Image 1 (cartoon, rainbow, N blue to C red):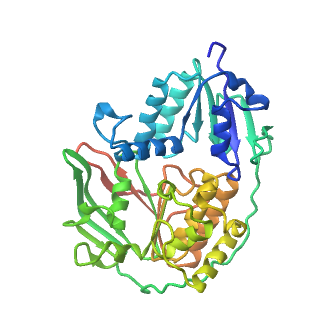
Image 2: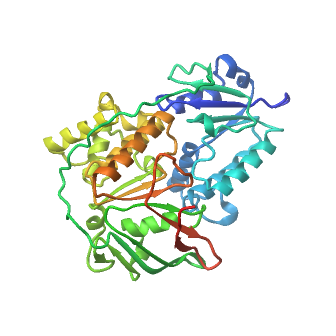
Image 3: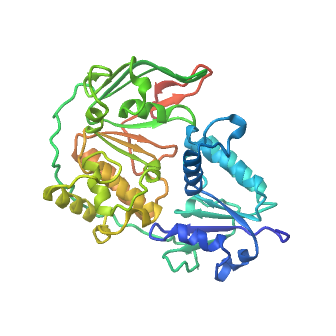
Length: 414
């Protein structure tokens, strides 16, 4: 780009078809203020782009972005993926880069480092930052606009704020699934160690989670948070041979992965990468009863009724027959949240539940979590790099990286 770089901060509602909006810019078909970019070549930095590269590597059994490490892209933590992908984007020498929620999945140190990197980059390349909340826009960006619907019309951001979400009381639908009333131990790790080859991940982790407790799991990128979650959910074979108790049963005592999963509701932003088929929103919610990636059995009438009740809670009944993979990313994440909740399991794991949400849906998810804490005995483990002021976890477990693997400690309130 020969001219002086021009930067835009674009606050985008969850109701917008963000993928179509991005495609309009990259295909040089923008109107209004953004038409200036129709004369230049750009590249997208986003979760969507990263997911496409992961799928491409899987499909073709290749390594494209991380050849120097001789390691497949999907094996890196979410934060590490973003750092590596930015290096890849810059190597393409684009005129501008669209940064779609660039600070998602990053710990505070990594956010600070990325901010300084983008600030330095802004001298030589135009930056278009997409964010669902104005507070996350880069401070050096002066052109700040709002896109509220799929007409993609650009409007100025009002100083008073874009959205004001009103708290509204709602009743949780009753549970159709009957679980054991009380467990002595939901989770207990005793001196748990995990390493992959020569790479230590966690060292001597001892952590006990009791029924009805609300935990936040914190730690920098690559500290092993995802590893601990996979040991709990049964998705990591390294759990066997360790001193781990899940729902009062020692790991390796004859339980199946499905015995564990039936007691867990799980939400992760990465789940959207797994759902490729044309399932409806209602089918996606119903799949939570069966812990399946999509719906492949016929649900009962009561299960269908319960799914509609939950869609009423999030105000999405009118989308029941819409295809899940055609929703905006924010809408998909709210649907996946309800999918995790529908059976009201003994344990609910929420991995970065607020990422990609606009203020309205952030308030909704906060109300859902606080309602569960107040009105149920569900145990909650909440993973996040940032502090959501509307939540108040009763316990915090922190992973601290060391040369021999991350160690864990209970973090006391400041």
